[in-house]
Amino acid sequence: MNDINAWVWWLVGAAALGIPLVVTAMPEFGMLAFGAAAAAATAGLGGDVVLQVLVFAVVSFALIAVVRPVAARHRAQRPQLATGVEALKGKQAIVLERVDGSGDGRIKLGGEIWSARALDAGQAYEVGQEVDVVDIEGATAIVM
Image 1 (cartoon, rainbow, N blue to C red):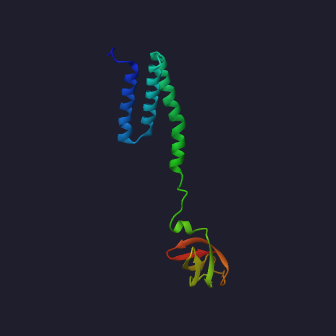
Image 2: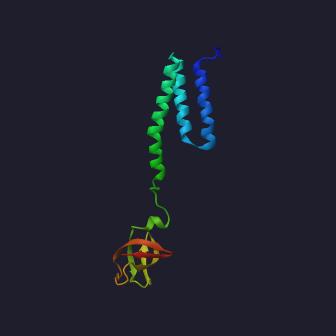
Image 3: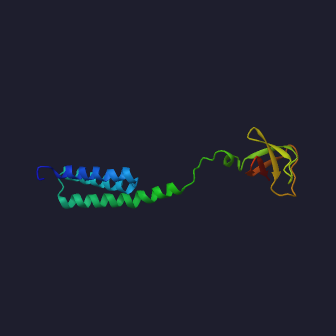
């Protein structure tokens, strides 16, 4: 054991921490592996065992304290790119046939003709008027 330098043991430890990272997909193991690699670098530069352990602990803790909350925040965010029906909500359209609460109207939305009805049943929109799409129900745009 004394024949192998400390930095080699730290690299073995880093590789050993990389295995559960791949198997469990827990990023904390990767952060600990990075701390072990930093300790290997410290050992390679001639740092004593206490300094190596301190570097391992500080780097690992710093990565977990900083990277983990950022990753959790990004994981919780909704995708910024809306596709399909969600992309049509909030768009403007032109009335082609009178739109009221009955659902018999037609609008031109994104180059396509859609059936439409007014959000407020008492409201009506005449031909040529611009409306905003607030929702899509099936193949019918709800406008205001």
